[in-house]
Structures are given as C-alpha cells and as structure tokens.
Length: 275
Image (cartoon, rainbow, N blue to C red; front, side):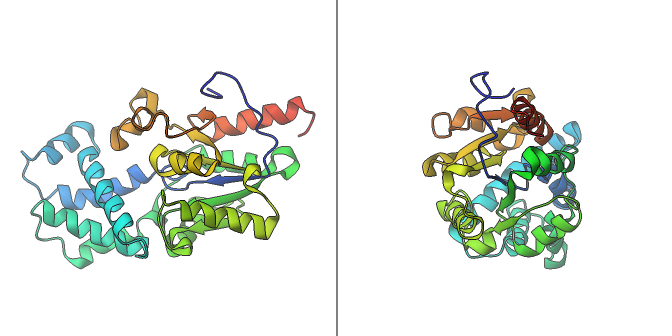
C-alpha cells in the first residue's frame, strides 16, 4: 500500500533518501541463521530452540534472543565496534545456553557476518531505480548500526552497482540507533556536504523501534518497508512492532519492498512529466 491512510503523499519533493541497511536492504535474518545454527545444533534435541528450528527451518527463538543481547550491549557499550559486539553476543548466548564448546574462534564468524549477507531480491534494482528517479534528484544515503569494515564489504558485494552519496555507521556516530545522535550525525553530514536540510530528507527503514520512533522524535519523515509483516513475516523476530509502538512512530508511507517504493516514486514523477 502507498500509505497508512490509503493516499499517496508527495514523494518527489525530497532531496535525500536515507536507508537503514540490515533488515531493510540486506536480509539479516537469513544471514544470521547459519552462524546461529553453530550454537543451536549443540543443544539437546528436546530443547525449545532446537525443536522450533527443526519445525520452521529457521532459528526464530535463537534469533529473537540474540537480537535482545545485541540491543542490550548497544545501549550499554555505545562505543564498542559492531563486529566486536557481535562476537561478544555470540559468546554470551552460547554461555547462556550451556554450550561450552563455542571458542573465540567459533564466535569470530559472527563479527564479520554482516558483510557476507545477501540483499533482499528487490533491493538492488529498487535502489538503482531510485537513484535515477526524477533525473537523479535524490542523494542516497545509508544510516546503519554496523562498523565500517562490514558496511564496506556489503557495498562491495551485496549492494555492488548501487550508488550511495553518503554512508553513516554507528562507528562514525559513536552510538547505536535508536540513539538520536546517529540521526543527528546523518542530518549534519547531509547539510554540510550537500546543503540538504532535515525537511528535505526521507528516512526509509524496516524497524519501527530502531528507526521510525527516533525519526518521529526528530521530526524526520519516514517510509516503513514492512517486508510482509502483516503476513507473519519479519515480525516473527521482532514482535509486532507496528502495534507495540503505535503512536510513537509516524511513518507516512508503507511498502513491502524497495521496488514498490520505486514504483510509487516513478509514478509520481511521471505524473509531473519528470522522468
């Protein structure tokens, strides 16, 4: 759908589109499933994590707990690099579950995992179309909670061929979303480097709590990429965030994919005779 109200607010007036990366453009759930299996495979067959993973062919319960550990450490240690934080969380989860054979070496793949993950099938084509939309009107930016090493690997692999004019990471900002400092860092960069003001920026993201809640707090307009949440998709991991944070987020548009966003952007520019 184009918006929560059923209408299509104007998307053509913005000068910059900022994107969350992992979970919005990159399939973090599928990416983490393999490393997490190194932990869950060592649990007894009767353990709830093992039984759930075998029934659904993905470690939903383990992913949920791992995401909780990550969020806790992001709040407690905002200056810790994301790749190091992931290794700590993997070790903590293993210890919590009584998996004693997960050595530091076995935990290490967690730290560099994000740079190896695949994009959602719609991401690259959608981003390329948005880069061309309105005769190249938009500056495209990334605002991500990862470290510079992982984001560089992603840009060189999964998002190769996509144009980004600015990339802002938690390592650059010194904190993790939903901290407002990350968004303020992005907005300052866009203003200083491109002359783009806050009301000319549109934030595009999946996570309601991590992206859309702070966006509302700053008065930053946003688009929710729901990734099929209404059909029991991504919300299996994060819970029903749209309902849980209702009233705290104010995204004005909702699409399931980046390509659906690109469809609407192109439609609106075409209606104005701008290709």
